[in-house]
Length: 119
Image (cartoon, rainbow, N blue to C red; front, side, top):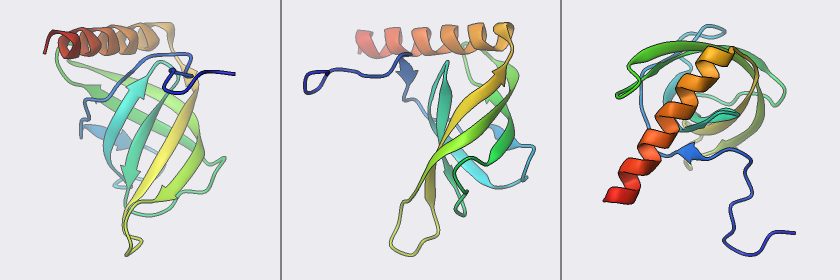
């Protein structure tokens, strides 16, 4: 069991959100990415997405990566974000991502974390 405040995730994540994302399964569904790791993304959507929904997404990683990656994943959590039910936080775990794309994500996250440590 982990102690309070200890990071339980297997992969570190960047919390610098970005908006350049395309959901090929349902265009226009995803508003923005809140955080990203080598295992998945947490995003904001305009409507709820059922758990276990398969998704195909394209992420335009911002600087310093400046590259587009494609991944497939499944929704593992969907939580309403506002009282009007117009915004949702959706966690997607990758089920298919190339080694090259995973490396690009890893480098992006490591760079982002290093930048945060310098601030």
